[in-house]
Image (tube, rainbow, N blue to C red; front, side):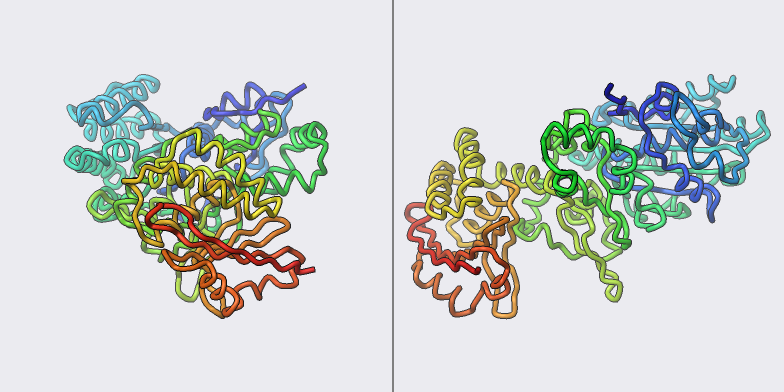
Length: 529
């Protein structure tokens, strides 16, 4: 009998009462709600469990201890055995992940007023005041007075109105100013508040919305809470063994082989300087539910067109997206007047932390896993190359096989056929354009591809590694293949891979401007036994 997985379910009460699997995060939550401070902000990418975390917090502060004990055949959660008051507090839970705020400021105000009215009704209260900020302030005061307990405020997806209006600067600023006044009530109502928690995908900088929320403790990069959302490798192997056992039996592979594939395709999100990575719950649960099919479930649940356009407009070198350097302060730079692609790519989950340089207080960002690397590259290649779908499909089917088989001639022929299908008017007659196109193609296919690889002897244009082969490409524009090959040999580019047991290929490639395609090419190989 298949277990019930909470795919897309964000209601903690429903998960516990209806017998869905639940990865217990209450020990980490307990650490948050009993530690220093009482007002917090957390940023995580979409579909990472923020809403479920908010729902769980609501149940805790509403004193619903019965949900945290043994229920529906599932064991008690960690917080049940920890020191906690289990006092019932009035709770204001707001979710702004409703509707399309590009409709205008009136839609935002109506959404806030409707939500506050429904919360007031559930506590046998009436909303007082003309504007949402007034109603919010009065509701906090009335709750505190009626129940003689401090109020808990939980806001999920606070930034949805801002993300919906990025393309309309005037409306975006109007939304930002309205939300600034609304959320400013949290600061002015501090004496009546027990706990405050805001979540979103992005954090708009202190000079705008957060200028009135600068008292919030930002736990986004706090290593203590790096796994408060998402699922760790340990949790996967502890909580989902029935699904894992079923999949490896059906596939006829070893557990080690399957877990390696799973980690490569879905794991890798990192949210602090602590080297702990997590899985996105949405994609992982879909994978288990679909009997172990490796598909881009998380990626396909959203459209990163805005990010693609931002990368293009800021002329970011897309061959270096997986080795971006960013300072700690850059994570906070996000505003319509000062929008930078690098921190936004991190906040939205398309890049993640791979390294942290404590001395320089600097992070290195890379793609989190194969799902994002391959899928995001496909989106980029559509923007940059605009090739017909049938030619793209042929590329997807033939090129990986050629490289996995060590068939250089077939690989070059497939690339030529694909490049020939690109509309001539978007091709830029530069070496960098062609190199970027090749890099995107390799990356899109899920291959281990790096460009501008720095080694002691120099810089390799593009390097591709498979299980059995290493391909070293040197590109020239209207030069000669001999010249390109000679550069690889003279600088001994493949020296670091000698002795690896893999067969090494040196490939000199010339781009022909008149044909707008690969022209002459030559290769040499080293058995490397």
